[in-house]
Image (tube, one colour):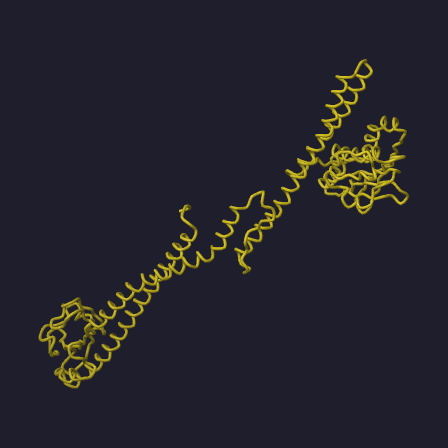
Length: 459
C-alpha cells in the first residue's frame, strides 16, 4: 500500500467511505419506504376491518356484498372473509371462495384480539402474490365471529423492487462519479507538491538563490513550500559559512606551512654553522606552535558548529582563574617589557574552568600581541552576572571593527599590524555563548581595547 501514489490512496479511501455512506443511505431509504408502505397497508386494513365488522353486525352474521362494494375494497387487490369460532367460513368475497384463510391456531389468536398475518406467494387461494391479513373478533347476536380483511402486497413489493433496482444502478454510478471527483480533487491539491518536487530535483549547491514555487493561497501546501524555502535559505547560508570557513582555514594553514618550508630550505642550503641551524629550528618551532594553536582553534569552532560546545559547569573562583592565566603569560610579558595585573575580588562564576581559561588566554594573547602597556585582568558583578575583562593601553580597535570583532577570521590589520588567525575572539564568543552568556568588546575611555565575557555569578 505504501507504494501506491498518494492521490490514488486518497481516492480509494474516499471511495470506501463513499461506498459505506451510499450503502447506509440506501438501506435506510429502503427500510424507511418499506415501513411507510406497511403502515399505509395496515392503516387501510384497520379501516376496512372496522367497516367489515360493522357490516357483519348489521347483517347479523352474514352478507359481505356491501363490503365488496365498499370503496375501501379494491377489486383483485383486497378481499374479506367471515369465519365462525371453529374456523368455518360464513361468507367471503369472490376471490377467496369457501377456503378459510386462517388455520386453527390463528383463529384462536384472532378470537382474543385483532391480529395481523402475512401469507407467502399463492398461499391464499384466489389471490396472486404475497398478502397481508387482519383478523378481528366480532360479537354478534349469533355468537362471536371473526372478520378477516386482506390486501395483496404486490404493489408494495413492486415499489420496493423498483427502489432496490434504482439503488443498485444509481449507487455504483454515484460512487464512480464521486471517486472521479475525489481523484480530481486530490490531483489538483497535490499539483503544487509535484511542482515543488520537480523544482527541488533541479536544485543543487551550484544554484544559489533557487527556491521552490509557492502557490498564492495560504493553505497547508503553501505553508510547506514557504517552510522548505526558509530551510533552503538556512542551508544556503550554512553552506556559504562552511565555504568561507574552509577557504579561510586553508589560507591560514597555507601561510605558516609555506614559511616553515622556506625556513627549512634556507637552513638546508645556506646554514654554515650551528647558530644558524639553531635559529632556523627555533623559527620552525614557533611556526609549528602556531599551527598547533590554529588546529586547536579550528577544532573548537568545528565542534561548536556540529552540536554546540559542551561545557562542564562548576563553581569557579575568579581570583584563581585570573592567577592561572597571568602565570601562563608571565614570562612572555617580562620578555616584552609588559606587565599583567589582576583584580578579581571575591567573585566566583558558574562555568567550565578549562574553557574559561581558554577564553581568557585568547584575550590576554590578543592584548600582548596587538596592544601596548599594562594588561589588566579585572572583574565586576552586576545583577547576578559577572563580567571578566581583559584590557590594555594600546591604540584600541579601529573604526568599524567592533561590529565584526567576533566574526571568524576577522582582523583589524589597519589598527594592529601583527595579525593572528582571526579566530581568537570568535572562540571567546563561542565559549561565552556555551555558558549562556555573551562576549563584548569596546575601546576604553582613555584608549586601549577592552574585551570581556559575561557569565552567571556563582553563590
